[in-house]
Image (cartoon, rainbow, N blue to C red; front, side, top):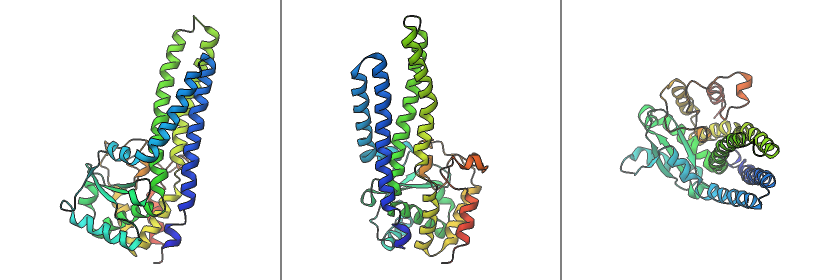
Length: 300
């Protein structure tokens, strides 16, 4: 169990710090460019402050942001004794602390784990998962999520939520700046043209940067969590059947967003999981059919 559940721990920690450092450099570089054009060091200082504050928030509070953005609420033992019993047993088997449990008000079958480390982890499941999955299937899904906790996938995944969201907000800001600069370019055509060009480039590059941040999480983590979860339960068929139900579930999740989609066990945007080779390059999850086949090919 340890060789699969914890192998990626050090790699994920390094990727997280690399992700946060890259975000800092990106924001500071943008601040430097705008500060240079406007001849205003204050813009650079502001960019440095923003990057440092958002890195701090991403590390310490990203789990709360992710849970709040999906509408998840804490669930007590009295509300779902079966859920608590399954998670407690799996946590003991995996040698992990008991995570906080949340429920997402959605009829779609889905779940995700979040937190900066196993001691501060949380697992959220949808109402649909609790009502539509049998005990073995629910156990497979929860084992998958606890596997993310065990190899520190939750840290890099949750940090990516905040950083990708900030980059998306910056893109919207660049659009407004570019529009204002085009309107005022008659007063300062040289500076206006340069800033308008930079704004256009930022508008194009910011969404790409946000996508790359989410892709930094890597599809491999989902396959590893499938295998680790199946080894934890000793019953790969439970998770395979759960994934089959997820594949056939067309219920929408209105609280999902592009910033949080990579957290879930399966893409929450139904009808968008096309599997052409080009689309696969930008998918944060492997196709469900491939994951199910891999699980059914396991020898446990």
